[in-house]
Length: 458
Image 1 (tube, rainbow, N blue to C red):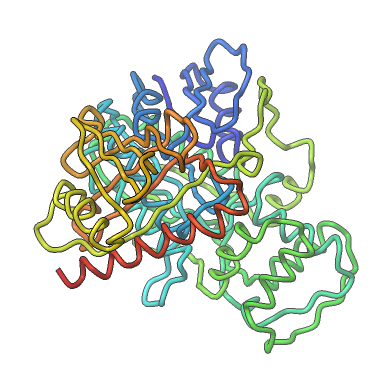
Image 2 (image 1 turned 180 degrees about the horizontal axis):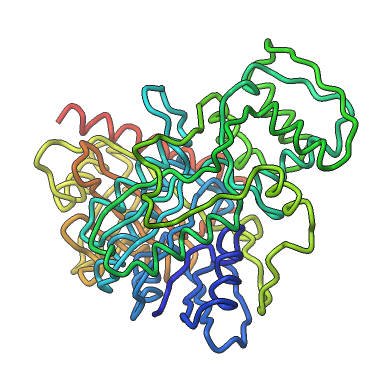
């Protein structure tokens, strides 16, 4: 069996790859943004940017199972316009469509527990939306909703460990009373493998909550970690600390990026305990590790997943001048993406009249200033990469863009929802960077906002 794993060098992905290589004879196609060198006969690394449907489609060729371990809270470009929910949507939609085209038998998505009857944070809403996107397509999908995943190289456990290790005095805000359950990384990997091996279940679309039986609070979990680390920390309850302050000091003390910490901390007010009706059925025969055992195992750095490959070139978006912009806009009822693209091309020259002129030349759209002969931007329609819910244009020239075969503008329908995604990918501006971000980048954001308002009036 050939298993495709997104985020194969990440926390869950690396432990899953290690388990598959040591305990099965399955082959792995590992998708990563970084360039990886591997001589292992059963691992094929594919450098893949999931924002590209073309690259994702090629990466999943001949695969049987797709493991989706992706979130977009880390930036993919030097400038990322838009929020992580929109980025998450686009990545999941690309993966689902590529899975359909390659006739995958099953998708397994690792998510977080979603509490009932609570107003969800943006982080959990995005996780739930990704689950819906993957499961509403024709490829059977199993979603594994996890409590806090405990492992030696996990970000959530890493934050707790650093807080305990660096603070002799720990203040407990009100959110530390929230009820939670954990799951060890070893148990999560075992469940993923049991889902893979249950071939007769690949025709079903299911969702399960994964969690060890013990119900904790964040405060009791932090105390357990301190006890296992043999740290004599002082704990003081101070419920009046606002969440905004909590997320700031967690980021400062642990050293984790704000883009990762802030969405996670916003979710700390939610109860993360399993629902009885969503627990694994008896045939999985799953016995979870207790919390103390999972913590002690995770504190041993020798248990970090060591894999038989190395990164040749680490993905570093800040060293590039690439721009990513993803906006979610209202879609008039009954409109296709062809209607949206045509409306945009007709509306934009009118909106920027009398400065902008749009001319057509075969499959090219040429944007010019009225009194300047050289094109500002040249867009080339891609019929080959366009389908019923997507219109795609490559940015092929103009004085505002550097040569870049991957730069593109797309309009993507969100099936079953009254909105669509307008996105620019891998755009490399010709203007000096700090001039670009204070002029052209701001202008683009304003234009898309005004286009969204225009469509609401339509």
